Structures are given as C-alpha cells and as structure tokens.
Amino acid sequence: MSGHSKWATIKHKKGAIDAKRGKLFTKLIKELTVAARMGGGDISGNPRLRKAITEAKSCAMPNDTIARAVKRGTGEIEGANYEELLYEGTGPAGTLFLVEGMTDNRNRTVAEIRKIFEKHAGVLGGAGTAGWAFERKGLIQVAQGAINEDQLMEIAVGNGAEDYTLEGDEWGITSPVDAMQVVLDALEAAKIPAKGSIAYMPKNKKMIEGRDAEIALNLAEALDDHDDVQNVFSDIDISDEEMTRIAQE
Image (tube, rainbow, N blue to C red; front, side, top):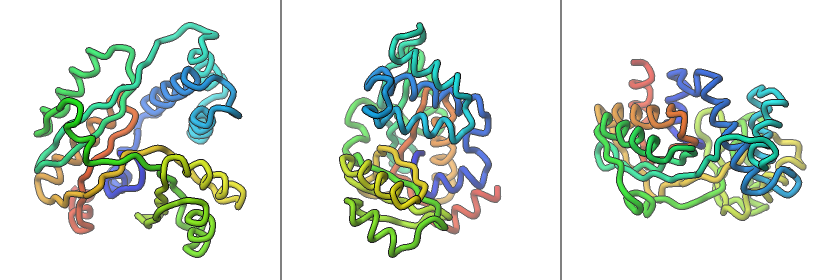
C-alpha cells in the first residue's frame, strides 16, 4: 500500500518492503518506461518522469539502467509495451482495495490478481466495486526530523496542502492533485527532502481486528509483491494494539 499508513508501518516491521531489489527495480523500470512514453524523455517538461528518476536513483539504480528504461519509453530502443490498469476488489470484513498495475499481458495479470484475491478471502470485482470509496490526492512524505509542525503549516499548508499527520517516524501530507508539485517545490526550496506521489485515499476507513486484520494485511502484501503491481490502496484501519500483535507474530 502506497503512502503513509498503518499497513506500511506493519510492512516495515515485518521486513516486507520489497525485500528483493530485483522486484523493486522491475517496478521502477516500468514506471520510468511508462512515464517517458506518456510525457516524453525531457524531465523539465515531465514531472512524472522526474519523480521516477529521483526515486530510482534513491534506490541505487544504475544510471545506464535508468537511461535504457527511458529510451524504451520514448521508442529509441525496443522493449515491452506496458499498459496501466486499475483493479478493484474486496477483502475480508468488507474492506475495499484499489490496485494500480502495469503489464504487457493483460489477460495473464488479471488472472493472477484474481487468484491472489481469492486466496485471501477476497473477490476481484469490476469497475466501480471500490473506486467510489476513494479520492485521488497528492501524498507527500517527509521524515519527522526534517521538519517541525510550524514549518508544515507555513510551507506545506501555505502552498496548498490540505492536511498532515504523523505516522511512525514520517509526516504524511495530503493535497489536491494539482497542488502537490507546488508543495514539493516549496519544500525543495526550503531544503527539506520529500517524496510525492498521486494516491487513492479512502474517504472513510474500516477498523478491523483479529483474523480479519491478519488476512487483509496478507492480501495487501501479496498484491504488492506481484511484479505487475505498482501500488495497493485500501480502506483498512487497524488499532495500534493490533499492529503490535501482528508485527510480533
């Protein structure tokens, strides 16, 4: 699940954040390729590509690997033609999931995603199954020690951010989609490192516990671990006590 969330915290505690560098690189390469195909190879006019390159470099991806991915996107060299897909489904206890994917084989990917849902007490649905419960937002992440609350108010909210919360050791700042880059630029000007992405944020969260919580988390992890999945979003909410219990298992 992308962004600041209790699920992301659980993932971190369980050591499940893209444990294999190869999986992470696969996802980053797809994003680089699609970003370049959609907006061209010039980062000055393609903020999505600029963000993808920044993220790839932060993960120690070699420059020539980045360059090849971009060239595949612009058509300078041959490569797979990825399409972006959005899957919608339900999990245990009526939880809702949105899954962003990129694939060069739509039929293969949808069959595998359906199987993951079914294995974890879920159902892959059609368009409209879960999308109604989410809204698109800009999501910016800043390390807790890099900025204080007064600066958040002045720099982030002052430049269009709507809200901010502290989850773990990270601030999560939400904004309208069209304001995210303005907030990121303001943070950069203040020399405050930040990462931004466009996310699906649940309008309301569902509190779950016990076995339902465990299954929902396993479903989210299994989806996120699939090579063709870029991001997973859900409306699940879990208490701190449940988080601690699950993380220790």
